[in-house]
Length: 171
Image 1 (spheres, rainbow, N blue to C red):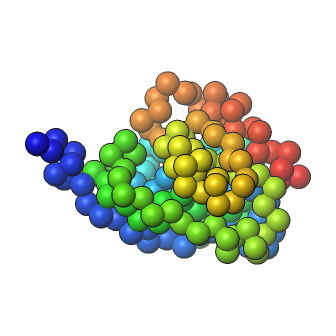
Image 2: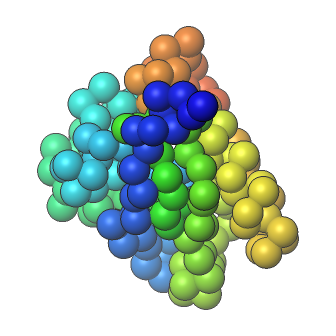
């Protein structure tokens, strides 16, 4: 008998285009936008996700407040942003419930930009990248701790220390 998570999974097709341009030097990959991000229409839209505050602190930039400011920050600082998952079955925003994954094709970003570092935001993105994309691309991704509010074990200061590995690639 299926459990409640199995019965309440829905099929999600990723609805956001990647953010990148020819000046992008690092690529940060999440797993799949959360329910709140899908409602907001852009990456890391949950008010308690620490992605935007973390990038602001790390890069000494003002906290972006709207999608246009977030996109501008990424492009100004050479950061490409997308997700590993193109489509899957998922329960709400639970990464652990992700099944039947179709990965995104990263070739458009890798062909257009001199990506020097690929990073994953959290364990599930890392696991999916290693299983589904690493064999195709032959490029290792650095696993960074999740900025999700579910990763309460890490303070913003700890995340900043861990994520600082991206800085040399942006110089």
